[in-house]
Length: 443
Image 1 (tube, one colour):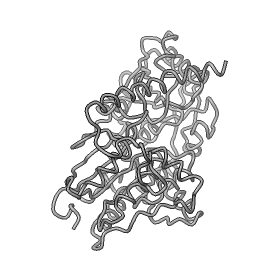
Image 2: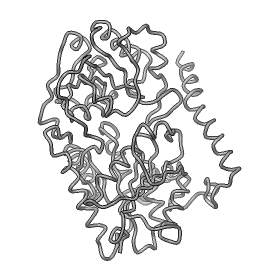
Image 3: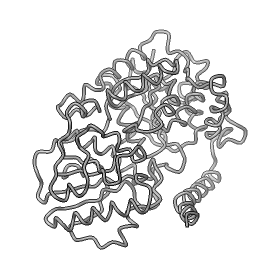
Image 4: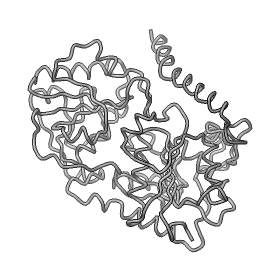
């Protein structure tokens, strides 16, 4: 019998960044069946975007345990769970980039090959899917549930799987797990405009400087308003995407008025005081629309796939700073909003019912679950799959490669100290040195 039949549902979440930890942990709480008590263990995949303690606090999601692991360490933990190293898990949420999901599916397939029972494996996307649709989806194929955050995504996901001959049954429509909060009930005093910044969109100094200048100009044109620049991370921290030109540095060369401020913190808390949300293409726009807050997706830099704002075509939210400066207020298209999984008219909780039913049915299967069966195998993708797995120190059959970190034993105290120092040096290289070298190369 699964552990859930007699006690709290045991759930593990493996995440590789702050935003994916937020998505994974909140998804776990929303898709688990009924009013079941949940025991949540968090695993943070070691890498350039491993969240800091401050980022984890800002996410605001608690776990019963939380530790940092390599891919091989995580697989070893999953192999030990239920085999003398603790109780087995009922549900595993893989909150990773596509390549990470694919590597874990193959590694877990090896680990659980001879198991009569295994956890239900769930994966999906943190937000809007506007690029690498086929690539990301096929790398996620093989999980028991591939979550789609909207009706539109569910249709697209199934079409991709069917188009390559992969089983689309895992695609399950849900909604973004972090939507919520009180609906906008009227303008605040002072009226508050929030620009939701993104780490990598746009990516050029010219475009980022332009957006900052327009935000500051809006603050000067409307001194009675509070104008906030909502930032994802502090300098030196990493998020899901690399930020080579943080707005914190750009603003040091500007001369903003007193009603302009930089803010951090939980997006939901910022939205509590927002009267107008402005962004290029952030998922924060969907959070804002869910709460009926006037929301603008900027067209100043064009409506382009590279910016991701093409996803909002038909939303009624596209506008420019010139329009906003003169008082324009967007009117979202109700049909478009509904297709995006935004339940501004209520019914948000029911968005997860289908996922709950499917997980409950999988947990109650008398013969356990079938082996994991990703679309990519050494037969279907012999020139692609080995490289994906090697990035996580796994061979094509899912076994650890020779020399893989912690493949043979748990790290001792000395290894832990060396590992922390090496990771610090790596992060410094990625976040500080590499951007400088790239900019010098553009001179």
